[in-house]
Length: 596
Image (cartoon, rainbow, N blue to C red):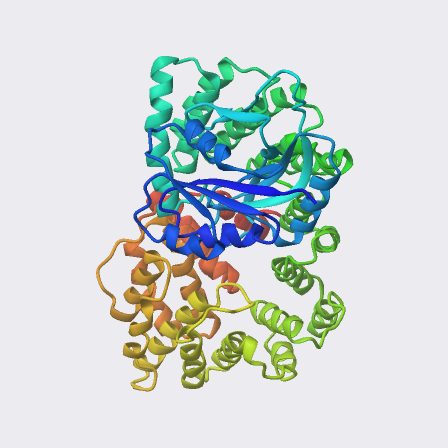
């Protein structure tokens, strides 16, 4: 059995260090930590894993710090991880089997670079060399250091694996910002010495992209591309990121052009073809998007070194095809692709919500909707499946079927939050506001967030403010807003806190565009329970939203709730008063008012 040394360099990594070390503690024989000046609890948290800790004065040189860690290692193999990385537990045994059987001296792992604080389903991917034979390699480079063989006789063709690593470093969190603040001056110094260094231009582009500054990211990526070397490992990523910047900047025509260039260089890159399909979809060129997604399915998976998104050859392509056919009202085809997607990745519960939406469009007999949703599960009476079914049915306003399913749920402590939330929803739509209020209070006051269903906490707050406003309007003191306020601080997002407090106090505030989805959801829920006077009263919130599309968004709320004439009226008002129309409004006009 081979001995493995984990080598790390750290500084103020308390947020993720335990998660990192826990992920590999069962397979490494020693843990080498080179600390470059931590002032938080990093070393204290790491100490329970019995590491060997070495202090190293930070000299703005990652390569030398990495090499210092290698010099302390005694294992046959070196595993290098950053503190914000962790190997998937289900892949650990696979990794050990590879280490014991490979003839290679270096092993590449598949990194999932998460891009969403709230979901591990949103990520891009890259291959990274992180395991190698001891005494055969060292690092070169001040930042984004490269592994170099100690002599020409060392074989350095990597063994590419599908062993996955969680990576949290691209998240727009405080930790991510600190990393960018540290990295960017180092990269800039290198560019001052060599302004045409394609790799460092690429690295600088990555820093700006992580910060959401796509204009500056594109500037550096394009400069890097001008000096590209297609034999280097980062070049396929460079092309993809240029296209991504164009997409985020709504310059999809240019994005498609760079992807087509990329496909000439790397014709087996299914991820390029998939992203081209996404850009065609954004441009409403649905036939071309469908062609691209179907091509992804026929191409199969990208080679490991050309994979940036993952699952594009099946799951993602199926979902996008389902979405397009749904937009075109071809519900049979839409359902077919959603079912293929959930077969490819059965843990994606969110697809059941899309399937429920399609089934509700397809069947006038709503009991058949329930029957078909049940058929998605191997055991329709299992509690987690029932919870999802009830939530889906409530979303589709099939209240009779939802209540029928809810009555079959047996109380189980593990799922108390979900059960209370769903009971609250059932009562809310029956207009039993006080009883619903009491259930939602249980959800927001729970010590631990352990819900199966998505976003139950913020949704519970939304229902609570509506219950409170309805009771207040009717002259009842039963659903006091003051009972909600102590829990508002438990919300993670300042934006969410601001919205809830606004509806409770009607304080003067300006909401950015990113807040409007939650605001319109609250307005939509008020309409769903036919509290029209309250709805009219709360339309004043539109004056607080910093957007020129408020009337179009309001039109969507009306349309979603069956008030088509009011939807049309607000679209026409938007055109006349604000000179603004968007794609969703055009679709509504075509579907309901213009097409014969």
